[in-house]
Length: 88
Image (cartoon, rainbow, N blue to C red):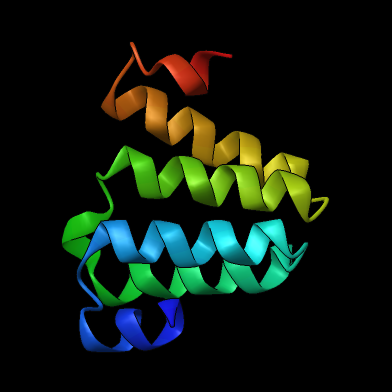
């Protein structure tokens, strides 16, 4: 259902984040990474959405790509130095 909702409203960050979280809950971390990276490439104006970027960092970390996850966290902190989740 989430996949279908994303296909209908691909610019909706809420649907995107719910779909990515669902993938993570199923331990499909690489699939979540591909979804989030593809979304950010497709909708470049959302690259400053720290919610999407944090989900990407979390998915990268869960997929065993800690170095790439850290790079995304650093980008988040450049956008918002007070980002609570990125600081932890």
